[in-house]
Every structure is written in C-alpha cells, then in structure tokens.
Amino acid sequence: MSYRIAFVFDDTLDVLDGVQQHIVTLGKELARRGHDVHYLVGQTEHSPVPNTHAMSRNVMVRANGNRMRIPLPASRRLIARTLTEGGFDILHVQAPYSPFMAGRVLEAASPDTGVVATYHIAVSDPLSAVGGMALGAINAHTHRRIDEVIAVSDVAARYAAITAHTRARVIANPVDVRMMRDRAAAADNGTLDSDTVAPHIVFLGRFVKRKGADILLDAIEYGEQHRLFPAGTYVTMAGKGPLLDACRHRAAGFDTPITFTGFIEESAKPALLRSADVAVFPATGGESFGIVLLEAIASGATVTLAGDNPGYHSTLLGDTDALFPVHGRDAARILAERIARAINDTAWAKQVHAREALLLDRYDVRTIADQVEQVYMQAIAKRRKA
Image 1 (spheres, one colour):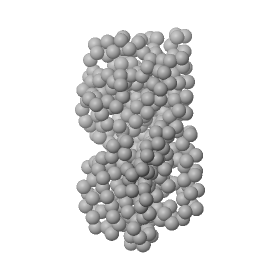
Image 2 (image 1 turned 135 degrees about the vertical axis):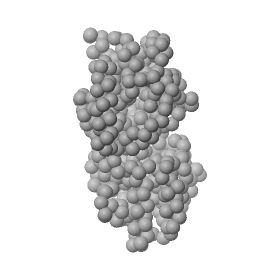
Image 3 (image 1 turned 180 degrees about the vertical axis):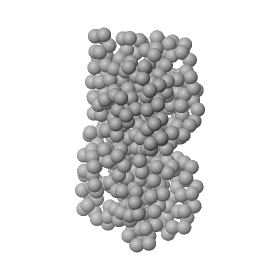
Image 4 (image 1 turned 90 degrees about the vertical axis):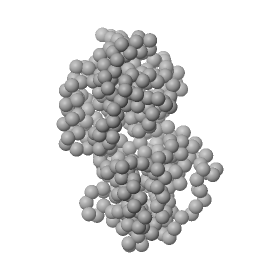
C-alpha cells in the first residue's frame, strides 16, 4: 500500500544538517517504494528534493550549541490550502517543533490523517533543557494530535520524555549505505589521491566548540611532542564555522601538515572519508545520534573514532575501542595514542573496522524505512478507528 506522506519541518532544506539529511534520505527511499512524498518546510529556495512546499520565512537564532533557523508565523490559509490539495495520509513532524509553523500544521490536520513525530535532539546544557520544557508546555495542545512518537536514539527519547512527557520508540537515523559506498568507490578513480601511502587523519564537522576540533588539535600537538605518528602523517579538517580561523592559526605552528578545506559538498564527503586511515569526530556533547560516524564507516574509513558523548556512545553500541574521552586532562593523550594505534597496529585496526562495518545493516535506510512504514500503518489505523 502506498501513502501520501508529508514531512513537516520548521527549518530549511537549503542546507543538509542532521535533520535535513534524515528526512531527505528517508523520503527518497519511501518515494522509491512508491509513496508520494512531500516536504512542508521553512523558507527554502534550493531544495534537493521535489514536492517541497515552503510554508514560512525563517530567522536565525542560537540554541543547543548551534545556530539554527526558526520560522516566523506561517499563513494559516497557505497551510489549509496545502493540506487540502495534498490529501495526506501521514504528516511526519520533526520534533521539537515550533508553534508558528509545524504546530499550526498540526492544528489544521484532517482528523483522518495519521500524525507521527520524530525527536532528534539531545540536551546539551541545563538551559536547553529548560527551554525544551517550556516549548513542550506551549505545544502540549498540538502534541495531543500526534498518534505515534519516534526518537532517533535513547538520548533523543529521554529528551522527548523530559520536554513533552511522551514515550518514544527508538528508530535510528537512516544512512544510505549503498550510495555512500558507490560514491566512495568512484572516488578511487581519481577524485582523491587514494594511492598516497602516508597516514591520513580526517575531521569533518562544524567548527563550533561542541564539535571538538580543538580536541583533535590538542591530540595532534601531543602526538608531535611524543613522536607518536609516523613520518608523513597529514590531516584534513573539513567544514566551516566561527572557530575555523582560530584553528587555522593554531595549526600553522604545527609540524604535521593540516589542510582546512572549508565546506564540503555532500557528493564529495564519501571520497574524503574513504581516504581516511583514521576519521576522528571529537564532539563533546549535544549529539542525539551521529550520522557522520556511519557515513565514515560506510565510505570505507579504515578506523572511525568518536568522542564518548551519549549520542555517539549509543550509535557505536558502546565500543570502547572506537570511543575516547573528550573531557579531562588526559583527553588529548588518549586520543593521540588511539590515533597512533589505528595507524600503527594493523591487526587492531582491522578488528575495529570489522566491528564498525557490522553496524551498517542496522542503520541502513532500507532497514529504517521498513520500521517507519510500520509506524505509519499504526498511526493511520488509529485514525481510521477513531
């Protein structure tokens, strides 16, 4: 059975951060299966997917350690017209959500339409928890319209329980494993110098405090001082953000060559990650999942190392070889020694890589879409019985 599905998301699709990646990846798989997939989103001018309906203008704010866009009040008339024309079987809302856009969509939803919410966020500090509870109180009346609740991890499920007083079933973020592997394999034909024998360390992420680029630089500095890395070891740090210039300035004083590429297009990510002998993601917190970890594994990074925050810990199923501490005076030493082991101890690296590769079936978009379709069926069944 095919459904008419609308993903409802307050933010833009002009950039592909975590939630955008989630709904675009899942939506493409659902469309491949014959569902009619639409996106009711905030201000968007260059969507990567068809059937995109921009419902509001957005403004930039800072929250949960990130800069993010929130919607200005959306037109109720536009919402009503879009829902009427769409005749959707399912509204799939990305949570937490704003009362000014997604909340208004829920208010206007047909009684026959099943509503599913997916929670994506993890609390990064007490202030964000208080803000989440306040938003949950504001949205309490529309949250009652939701038939089924999903969270992308146990961490996100705890956020849903704290802020919306709801129990969520955990269905992970999806990764298109086949696409990542295909793009990475194509990169071997010359996109990157895959014949380079010198060890390559890769960081990919925003240059903001909680993503931990400074922790990796601490580890590189420690490794230089104690001669842990083989001659020729080089580092690529990809991404942009307010701390980029400070990191560049600091790295200029190192002996280890460090290249800062700036923003990397989605299509180029698999090639970069495949080239990594060690892909390092030292985020300190505020992570509900860790899509980039799985992208690195799927692309063929030899070893993927992750900061031991709750979201990454959950995604990697607590693998103590792949996880490293991000707080404390020994954090730089431990990460430097872990990177050195990944480079120098081939047998150990192969064992870690094999365990990480086993995770991919669990998170592949085809597996996740099966689970989400079941939730859709349950939400629709509730509506049709009402």
